Figure (cartoon, rainbow, N blue to C red):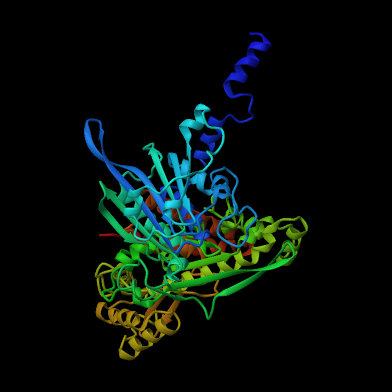
Length: 609
């Protein structure tokens, strides 16, 4: 092939452009919107930025034949608002990729100039816009049609023309304003829409936008209506409710009884504010924390995670990253996988748009990547040998690494979450789900049988003959309340069960500063407490991992949990082996202890009926 022929082919293929329009559009269509609800949220951003107090989202469904069967499918999705509207110049800019009127505006939730066209073409092939500033009868209209762009028919945004808002949209709306904008998506490809039906689309959108715009909804700044229609007959119609992952806002979408009263309470005495110096100005980052109230624990002792409000909380796990009052994402990377405690705390980190680069805000406003990556950040791993925390921060600043601006926030959140998890654990300490009681048969009874067998075989100790009287019971109750942080009700139940079942040994938990992962406490009445130290990693990774309720755990999660616990047990034994090796002078004595403990373990575990 000659050079000239090759050049002709290239020229005819895409007119010599660096990026052919068809390839550019494909890349933009796959630009990372998580689902249809997130794409719609981008349009709501535009409405809020235009000072809209009322936003309506419509799903229009039609009956179509799919493989010779009639199905209901979404034909159009529309967003209509009573915002300030646009003139001809602004409308044309708004339909351009990477353009807009808020590119350098750090005062609101907009800025990146990609929202309207990007969000729209991620879901549909045809986008129509009507906008007006003097009534819907004086609207301007323009559009984007991917078929026209890909074929080369359209290279520029069509010049807006005067065109009234269609009557069907006027009749569907509950509040057409003298100013406003109507955006209509059509010509869908099924694989682009996340949900097939209008109801499913709007129900999922309501949950998301209720969380994203909870502050606007709660403060009465924005009212969001969601409606689905088939042949102009309503099949779904509701208002978005505030969905607060902090569970402090009421009224909310939380199931009763916490739709009308807060389900959580503020953690600590007050919320925390961090000043951040960036580009010559001081900006405030607000960190708010909450944790579940004791009222969330059912009176019958059943698992609160299985209640309607517990299942609601399970969908709101993570740190809420908020920018200019609008949530970017609920970042679950801060949570501990399977741990049921994670649904019972809330953390909100709010910052202004001026700190977008510091937090790593993406252009589709769905994430703060820098802050998210720091959820697993361990500064010691990046520190130089012998480098202290403040020196490490100073080095980051000298190197131009903006992480030094948020590292204090990250450390604070992680430290507080550790404390919150312990308090949440204490809330349900000793509470037995599924109707079980402490005086039911348990492993403590089996251990007690072995305990008594040893005494009967001649290995009696001073405590074996002690009488567990009422005074000893009261002592155990007080110990559980004051030293082990059990509730009074649970402590009394445990102490009474010891008497009822004739137990000599019980397993309890406590937060201690000891390096041991368990301690042995002897209580009056000949009672031995095996006290697991909840601060020790062995408790979290082994004891709790295997002891946690699994009713809502998937098979894959359960297998992973067991594998991790098995690995932890092996590491525990490896630590013992290393201990033997390092303590050379006492090696023989340690090995004797291991041998004798093995004999005792064989007696307790091996001689099963």
